[in-house]
Image 1 (cartoon, rainbow, N blue to C red):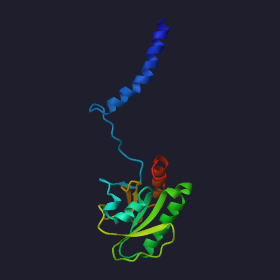
Image 2 (image 1 turned 30 degrees about the horizontal axis):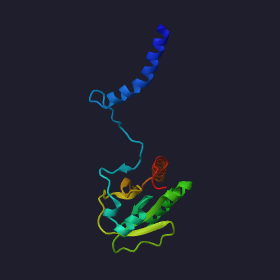
Image 3 (image 1 turned 120 degrees about the vertical axis):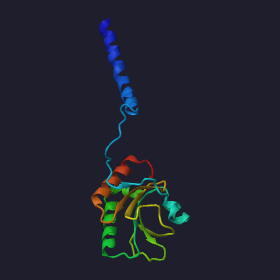
Image 4 (image 1 turned 180 degrees about the vertical axis):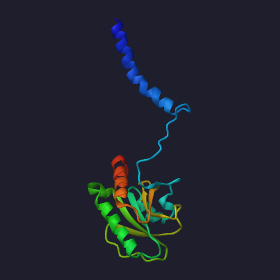
Length: 174
């Protein structure tokens, strides 16, 4: 009889222990905060909404898909074209999931974008976006909010890994 009580107690402990540990980790006594994240891009402090810097009609058209936005300056020289090519290759590397991702070339109002082949979309921004000045590439979620940003001379492998991770765990944009 004593053996049965011990087994029952151990079984209850197996189910109760994770709950107790989780509660303890959220108290001041043993609060856990991860030191690093897995993403390579820089997270936004407050995510800017796409509609704040694109015309509402265009923002609505992009709604529902993940978007890789390339924020160009006034001139698209050789470095710009090389980064656009890299973004196209990151998009192509997503395989079957690339249908969930759009490529967007954003240029200041009044500047003519270079001739871009499909699947690139291009739009002029109406106002300065609420983003760091160093942001060159922005991953935008299907709800239209900026998720992460990457500076000029970004690493395509890191961007590909971040995008693949987001597409794997996101049910949105299907």
